[in-house]
Length: 393
Ligand code: SF4
Image (tube, rainbow, N blue to C red; front, side, top):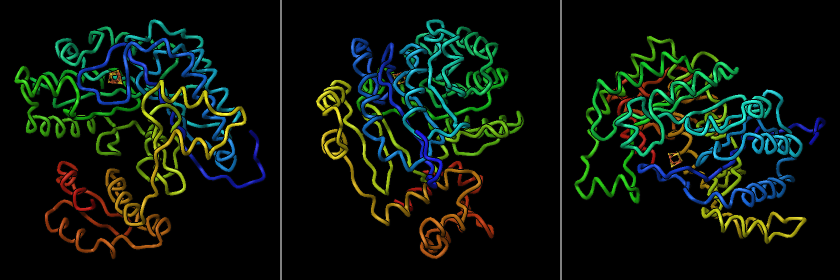
């Protein structure tokens, strides 16, 4: 698509691939094992959906694409290459757009490295979670720590330097020693970006069921807090920039795509269960992949967005208040905090005035601090961020 005369507004594109080799016991994402027979239909459906959004995308410039899941590496790299080519042809894709694919270590040997190198993907996000075999077993992951390490090195040796590694702390039966091992292994591999999350025990997951039944202990929250504090120091020593509560990057490698979520920019989600934020409206597609495919198949060849809006998505306008609150919560997730001038431009309101009482209370408690240009979490506030965010809900 070429639209050089008009001024284009930036948008990020998310594409959801719901296939997984095995459903991990902690995972509550919209991801499924054993539905590979749907792959071809699903790929056709996401391309149809993309075409349906063409009129909307005409006035936008795609600044990032994130192919997530699920596990995008469950489908061949050649198919992802084709998908990116179609996106390139049907949208105003910025030439330097960040294009990320989420992958699992155990899928890498099945991927054609040449296809991957020519796919347009310029960033890989690898779900490692741990380098300790017993922990990987407990999480139902399908590889060993050494295997994961070898696969990362294999990708790096084939030119993929812009790599994110996902790690989890606060695991069931976790120890400080094991976390130190996983974190230092990750640092030694020299990724450009690290995401370190605390394990959440989500309702409806097998892990939650086993904990509720007493088969496994609850994760230790105090240990998780210690592990997080340790990570902040250790990653600083390794020259990573802590730019978001759970994310660290080498200089210049902060994620463009995720930053769009945190600074409340527009994003469009394609695929089963994908979420969007467009024109101050939040909506998400139907979650079930088969239902999603059927609806897309039923669309008339010339596709009508209104039909799509009614059949595929479930959405709601975001009230002005919610928009302000979300801006505060997402903005405070960024370590540099909320840029007061940007907030005023975005909302025509001064956050220091509308949230005066909340800001003062949290400043008194040592959780927030304010400069001329920013409102941000203090070191203590970063550790107790959920407590701060509650104030804006
Ligand atoms: S591979 Fe990822 S998306 Fe799939 S079940 Fe495991 S954690 Fe969830």
